[in-house]
View 1: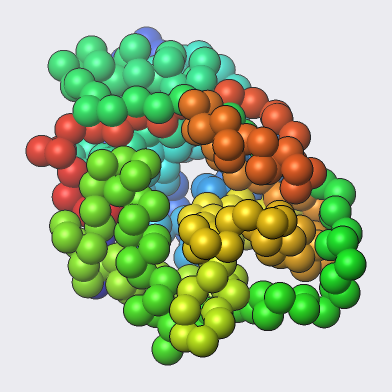
View 2: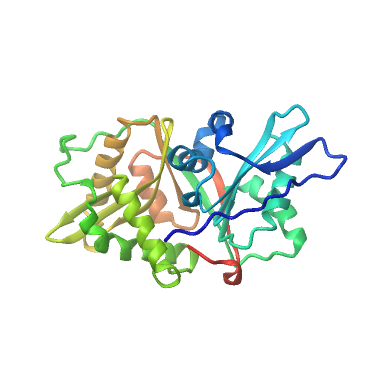
Length: 304
């Protein structure tokens, strides 16, 4: 099943430090969400996990930590685990959260805005950690629907949420995309966990597909879902349908539908993938920030 929650129980802070770090609890959920909501486009992944699962849950695949000042006010929140993510309002909070993250043996990747990840990494590597792969990505956002040309909003292409029986169509494509990005094939290293996560997204109606004659034509996953922002990943169109406007049509229909339930949609695009960047601009997305993703060595990787 899914990876167990990473647990690092001790508080971290020098005795003279005016801030301290400790694991967050479910009774702090409202306060944490309020802190994260100040920059929703950058914190959507953490917010969605908390809204879906609570602050403490194995499905988070890690532990949420809070950094507070002597008055108890939050200066930073981080998810430390399979994916390590952070949001801070001070350098001292970033430094302490990085020190806590050093202790986690299951980290697969560290992701965030370029400058914040660079600072986080400078503290993180003081324990001798090395990265396996680093990639720079551009955060794109769409906040106004692009009407599908000559297509009704009723989704004439057949775009719809995937069904559980279509899991075997979705999984190989998702694994292929994960391998292309990280060099790790989740169907090989964690087949049961990967299957469970794909199925859960389908059951949550967050995997959108176009299927024709039992063939997957288009797929996109709403990985994170909050009222202000949805975050998309795993966007794929069958190769023989990527031309003649098919991909743009599918994305326009999808974003038109999703923007009925949220204020904006965001996604990440590798900075070297000019084709993808051009595609998303055609779909109405606009550049918002530069991100950095650092993948850790395989020996430190337990689950994908």
